[in-house]
Length: 169
Image (cartoon, rainbow, N blue to C red; front, side, top):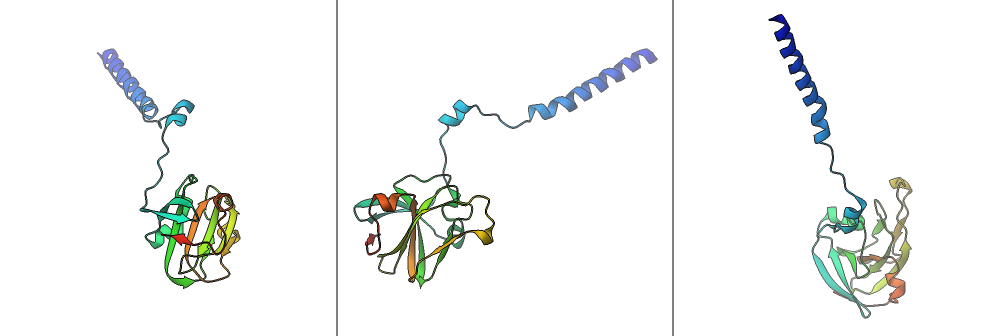
């Protein structure tokens, strides 16, 4: 009788131990093959967009609606197509300062006045991964601006965007 009880207890311990060690293995993170990565669609965050025209080039621009949108800017994206960008719109002209905090790619920055004329262009502004906030480079127009547009690196040079150009939106 004691022998049978001992066998039941050992079988119970074996089952409990197997369950304990097996369960974490079944709950491990999903693994993805390189083939799956290449075929998976990259999902970018969704913001309200607007079409703008600079010279003869049309862009689909993400609009910053809140202060939080302005703080994060394009850093919420992993990449940026050539025909897209972001518009930062302020209530009045002032000296607005931009930086590349948490950015994953390089951009061009365009400062506009209240009449939507280009004041200043910063080309090929580099992402600064790993740089402490206080050491990040800052970008600001020498003149007061009211609108700032960020585009994919090289767009301003490729499309001849320069001070004095009108922007339609």
